[in-house]
Amino acid sequence: MALETTLATLLGMLCSRVYPDIAGDPLPPRPYITYQQVGGVAVNFLERAVVGKRNARVQINVWADTRLAASALAGQVEDAIKLCTDFQGEPLAAWVAVHEPDLRLYGTRQDFTIWSPA
Image (tube, rainbow, N blue to C red; front, side):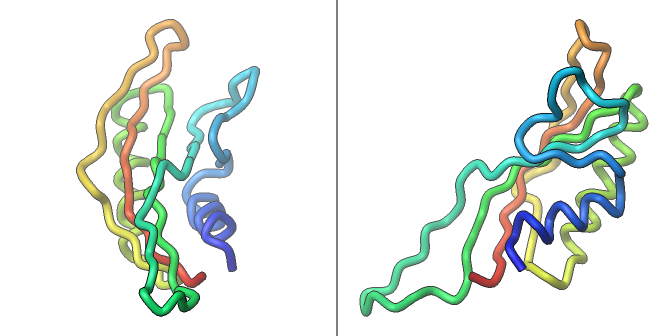
């Protein structure tokens, strides 16, 4: 199964609104989660063999009506990724709290490194 499909399914168990890249316009009801691949490690072998695993650096954003709600959901996301058995994922750092005052959004942003089958 492709990483995006697995990730969307995993996040969908935590929140019913999960979107790749952006949530859309108009913004959906909160809470919601967005995710985007923002790089990763390119693995190459000298013998030009096909690699059996792929790596992605994935940024996951959680948006909610309050700071407490955003942080609580972000903690669930981090735990779910670390415990997932379909891929090997770990946070690259703790989440960053973000706030969009014009939209009255509270959120978090966190990057993960995820190794998955090719």
